[in-house]
Length: 202
Image (cartoon, rainbow, N blue to C red; front, side):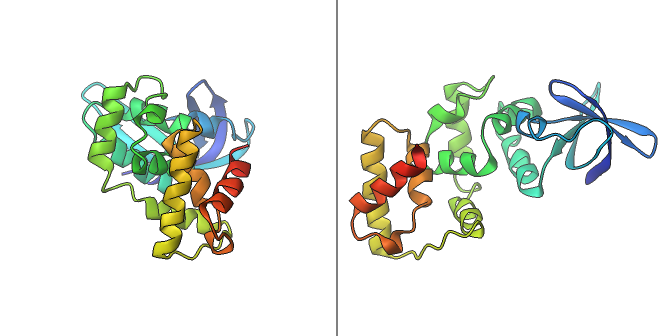
């Protein structure tokens, strides 16, 4: 119904903004990540929005981009995760961080979000495994300028590197994300990948 709101920041709260759009103030719930990158009061902002309609209220949730909005919509399809829970997850991790965590079956990292327990995190992974595509996260990484050529050999090297990093104490999500950032076309062995991945983890 409301695709986005664009206007001046009127008020900044702990998890909510009031945006003045043509003289009308809209309450918009936001994630902590947006709050940390907010313009000042009186400056213009544009947020993509989701309107949550309940029997007793209508709530507007705002997001920095359409990708984050789409991930939010997927999260609220999981039984036990409402809009506030989904926003909590996106306050603790980016949409791509979530994709990496789901791909790596890393319920522990997801469960760090306030209000999200281990059981709910595991259910999230199970239900969204086929919907949150790791390829999208890799594509986003490539958009930043990382040139990676995928072959069966390079995938084997990546898997060995991920296993080694998890053995060193990193979570599956951290290891997966670090290894995916490495250009394996310049790496001959898994040791080469591990060295570069460790630099990314520092």
